[in-house]
Image 1: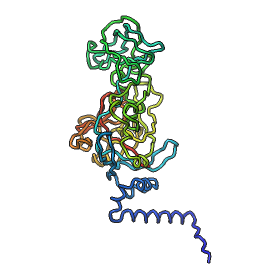
Image 2: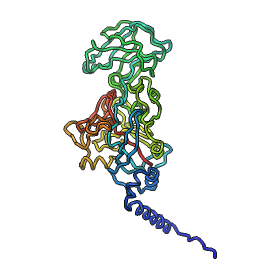
Image 3: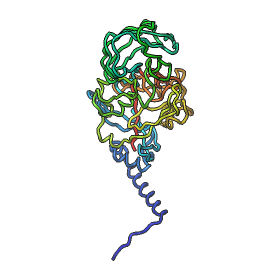
Image 4: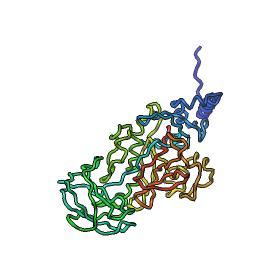
Length: 402
């Protein structure tokens, strides 16, 4: 006898699908299946893709993965901090489960190094005396003209760095250093700076918007733009030490950790990396450089949380992602946390994975929008604030299974 298949209409198909899903969920939730599930990354990914992971796993549940810094091995607890749709690089929108390191990384990375103020043109820069003009008085940086004398030639494409502590120290303490290229970590020489207009004029250093010379803010403190940050490059690279960074603009120079640390992704097993997506991340831009838009998009596998995602009061509401339920619950607040030391919360204290009783300064990706050289972070005392981009800090990075 020939048995014909049962043909279901659309409603019947939906009912069958719902029954199959319910049976699968009941099986998973039986006895110790959930504990077993958290070690099965591919099964977790399947549940996420079907849009039912939130029915099995909860905010605050943890998934443990292994990570190595090249010398030491760590078991890393990843907190489930959010469920929500994500957009992939091809435009597809899929369900996602957002994970964040419960502890922070075992060492510091610069968000972005202090940038160069001048790039040597065709033919290079011969040894001799040069001067630049600071466009604006900024704390101890007094508007005016300052000179320095190079004793060695700088080749074409080489850069000059310096004036790096200009707002914080007197001009008598300023120096200028030369490098053979943007990618060089070695200095040709370092020379003193003094008031004066001797030698060749290199131009005016603007306060906020780079021109022929870089801006005073980025020279003094680095750049607070996530898309061009050294931190973003480190988090999204598998490359060896010395190879995970490339210049992101004409004045970019290597972070201090480039030669000693390998790319962050090199520390994970491929099994874990295989279940992660490169997802759309939106970050607000600073307001001082005259950008045509107020935010920009990157596609990242690993990323730093934003102020808004950490349930902090946003600087541009809705620009940097939905708040993560994990932080709302942990803080016990009904409205986002304010910034500054008057808004301390024990829940914001993030401890080092290699020193689990030691709270750390932890970097966020949000710019401090009123300037070009400061990015947001979580202070070790348990509050949201900001710090200069060139400061080295640890991080509690995030990723998405999708």
